Image (cartoon, rainbow, N blue to C red):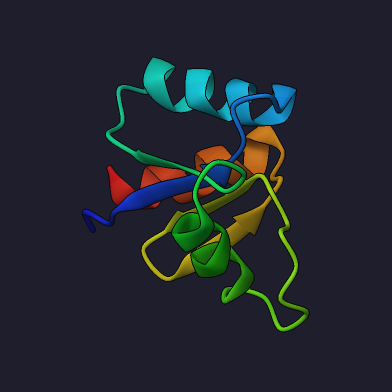
Length: 82
């Protein structure tokens, strides 16, 4: 499986920065979408959730949505894309 990885977050968010580092350290290509600086990105994130809220950071790996996952859960899903 070679799924696209998207990180929805905000530059100012320490958890977003953590996930950026985590994904880079795993040598994974990912797309970062800033949901505070770009309304299109914000709407894309809102549409992932029934409550239409800006629940960030959120990582999508293919069709899987991970809301603020811990390292163990994130590694599990990363292994499926490697």
